[in-house]
Image 1: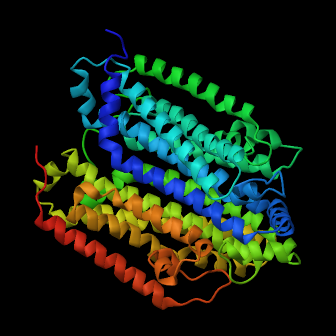
Image 2 (image 1 turned 135 degrees about the vertical axis):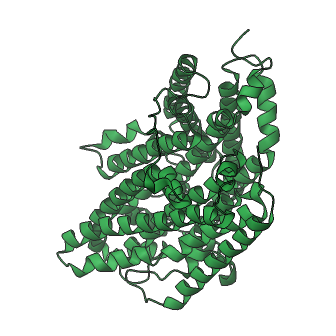
Length: 533
């Protein structure tokens, strides 16, 4: 039997399962791109204004590290899409990673692929089907994005190049996720590995772009994010660059299929280390078990957050050189600052870090649902452990973990920044600016807890809420939305520190909302049925 037998049926099954999810994600990306283009065209209507804004970005290393370079300072399309080239491409990559692993390693871990594999389905069919669905999704996303950008008033050629650049990034990371699904033995580990690769190549792209035309500029060519940017939509449209992610996809996909043939079903190529014969004292309660399940991931995330903090704190001092540039001041303050360009930059970057910390909190709380659906919670709840203590153990790790992440980022950024300025008080200012973002992060965890208790099949609403809040923060001012609409996002109520005025009342209310959501979820969990074997 051919290893690809049954691929078509699995493709139809995946599309049937994800028809709503994929439609919503594609719509979000298209609206985000078209809306940003439409707003920017009106904001920078003259060539002089566009040149001033583009020069401000290119002369600010920190912004170049985040968003990339503008190669044609007169191009309205390049200026419109600068925030979505690298940052938006990374979000497309995340979608591709989650989609591939959802239909490969996650299905295998849940036991459903074993059931499907007992029918007329080849060994390589599930991976092939997942890649077909993911590649098709990215191509549709690229095409609809192109149409949206053309409708917003940008050139058709540049819009088509931008849509294909986005699609190429997603396709490249689909192959990366396919390899990660073969190397690891769990969906969580596969996602963590693929996300770590995404973080590394994003940094490589950032280092290459900030290096200019000399030094380490070649590093941008080691990154799929960099490949997408080097297509240079609206700035020459270099179509040949798209061959690089295509070759990468073919080669890495072939490697993934080869790895699939070498491993056992349900196992990964990396051997799992057996635990001790008997449990230690720390595993006598649900909190100890939750800590054991989450500690490895938390350590990895913490190391990454400290590193990100060090990078942002180190480059923050470069912002002060632009104090005499009105264009730079206006642009950076529009990105979220309120007082001083350096404080504005640090406030903006800590805001981005808090969004990433929210993703960790969502992931931890969603473990409650996976433990329940995979029937690992039932043996625990069959003992003297009650439902509420068991749920609270994972919630506590979510709250503790997000706190550790933001404090780690604050310490890294504070140390690097204070070392640059020579002022020890800057360390405490930056650390405080990171800590005040915790209540907003906890609200996202509370949303997932509420969904887990009331509608456990809808726990993915946490990701939808995160994306919605992120879009409100990024594009709400650009679209001139009413303030009450932007206030739906918990991040809108966080004091803009460092540099802004501190107000405790919004933070107290955010903590109350998070606690209320968690309480509603716990009450719902206590009253509903729990799946049993």
